[in-house]
Amino acid sequence: MARYTESVCRICRREGAKLFFKGTRCYTKKCAFERRPSPPGQHGVRRRKVGEYGLQLREKQKVRKTYGVLERQFRNYFNDADSRPGVTGENLLRSLELRLDNVVYRMGFAPSRPSARQLVGHGHFTVNGRPTNIPSYQARPGDRIEVRESHRSREPFKVVRETLRSHQTPEWLRVDAATLGGQVADLPRRDQMPLDLNEQLVVEYYSR
Image (tube, rainbow, N blue to C red; front, top):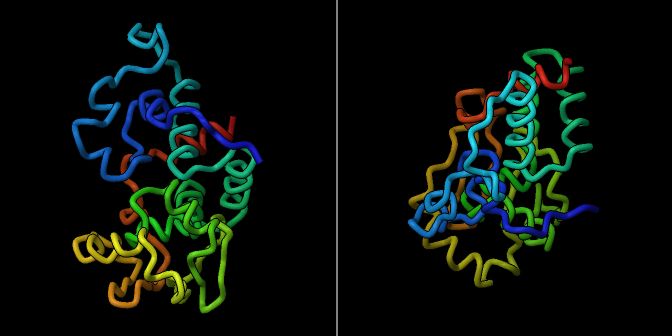
């Protein structure tokens, strides 16, 4: 499987927005986007006129990279969202939000989505009591997600215990800090998903 190995801060600079790939560092003055918000490359500071297609492409890339999904997988998410009843763009974001790695991140068990993906891939979590190491697993309302009991004493989760009580959990999730577990209470509504993403531009991009 393809893997991005360059600096993730370049992605934020290219998309012109913080995507919070480095967790708490992104909130400090050390953040590369804060220090140099222009696009990467020697021509990054040059002003360019962006057309309609360019806006759609950049927004598609921004959404895709926010959730750490490759192009073919993202297209599959779109096709699935388009085939289901309801608003296609909202269906797309909902499917991305319900990825197991994103749910782990939103519950506060990881400082960033890439970190959550790694923790899930290393088998630290269970879904409804079963060990699951698939970051793209689609969580559903009622699913119980917990740190495996034998892994709760490990270093990453010692830090989580200290920060979890101050973490702002979305309304569609329930978190129990004492047991390092939580539950998907409901499907996320549009106002409970990232508001800085314009899913309509993504729909327009794929509807050309």
